[in-house]
Image (cartoon, rainbow, N blue to C red; front, side):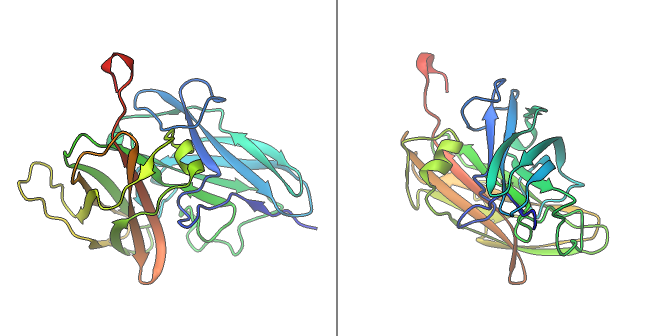
Length: 283
């Protein structure tokens, strides 16, 4: 007899969980979509119980963080906690009743991490560093590090990615940027993007240790090695430059993967689209 809690990872990239989604606006029962800066949004997660024992009062914690490689509780924003009963062999959609107030920090690009916990199903083995929200190693934790970037013609833009080290040890991470896989219909719908098609090779992407904004010839690399002293954070800049304007029905996916030696410790997927005009010329 056991409780086995699960928040499913994304596939093929675990940081694209579809068991986590955002509802922008003031109605938590509204359609999933992309959060809007200056407006509230609600966070949801599907918690499953694959065991043969009912789970009562499961604690579900919701965090948001700037796009990061290996997210830590100490550097993320804990939005709120919810509780749910999840029967054996079933699932429960859980709402964080506390709204997430989306700010302009980092252009509104954020990632969401959710953990389901119960004394009947503790993390096993106990994490070596309890501060890390370790989605790939624990089925009770999942991450949605899937964000939308709006293209403005062929203008170059940057996205800041943070890497943190714990208080006990320094951190060395090798970052690599590549073209991402086309998204499923469900993933597109969860971002509020429907009837769009993936286009390869339309967006050039690269990494740098310093901002390249305003540079005539921006310097960027496909790989970047960062050494972060313990107790500190470092930044990498992801430059995105459409080689030609994206059509209204197109999207491009750029992926950044972080590795500690051969182990993947984190990732970020950016979906670049051209904003569609609404009635009145607004976007």
